[in-house]
Amino acid sequence: MESIIVKKPGFLTTVQDLGRRQYQHFGIAQAGAMDTFSLRIANLLVGNVEHEATLEATLVGPELQFNHRGYLAVTGGGFAPKLNGKTIPLWSCVSYDKGDVLEIGTPAYGCRAYLAFAGGIAVPPVLGSKATFLRGKYGGYQGRALKKGDAIPIGSRKYEMPRRRIHDELIYNFQRNEAVRFIWGPQDEAFSEQQKEIFQTLSYSVSNQSDRMGYRLEGEAIAHQEGADIISDFIAPGSIQIPQDGKPIVLMADCQVTGGYTKIGTIISSDLPRVAQKRPGDAMQFQAISIELAHQTYKQMERAIQLVKIQNESLLKN
Image (cartoon, rainbow, N blue to C red; front, side, top):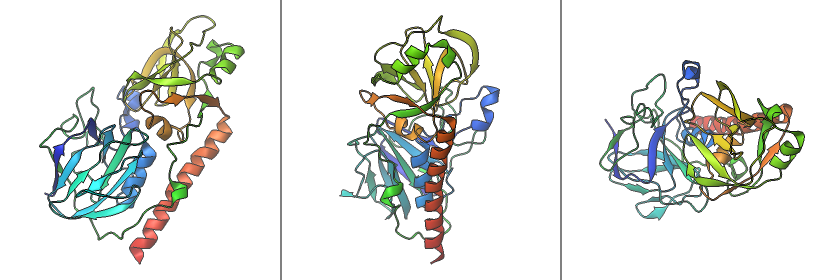
């Protein structure tokens, strides 16, 4: 089988797809890509289905050597990947040959890169997904982050790929520090209207105590009207918990499925990719919007992905 040899694993490189959403009601964490937009586009660029597994690299990317000829795409934060020492473009399909070496390096902005390979990553699915869940030690490549010497199996591709990239206007601008949009609830009544207004004026920073499970934010505390504890209920990626100390925790891809702290709001799905690219020290502000506007922004994101699909189908026919 074709494979990729890990020469250097980087800071944290794991196999991820879109996760196990269908098992959350059994207490199974969703896991999967932190930045789902970048993963989906990377797959489409190399001719895979959008939910195929990729490599997710964090802060410092891996160095990989190929033992076959194929195609790859790198998306996500502001990395400057190099193939045999020459910089290759992000958000593009690039060919590689047997013996070539890919270096992902470190990003100028953002913190996560997504590496898709034509044919996908051929690891066995666990509970319907190839996603690595590090805390549970299952899924992905042996349930763990990559190590030096690992051989990552790659599936066979169906056709030769034309060289292509997506239009610039469809790419997320991860450099802009815009407010993160959210909808109120489900426990926003635990906070006074004054505190809710204050929450939207504050600037937080992502603390070093942040990982794939959640981001702890540093900044001014938000006061509860009574207490922070509730009867445990459902939690999803994007939930904004306010524990007893009043400092927000943003739940991310590997979060637990229930929790007993008040949740002041939930980040809209189209802004989660931007949150996923935040790194320790980055600023974060919040802006409440209506459910109707949240639906509109979601449709805009899906239209962008649909345009890439249409573009790809057209290129493959020609």
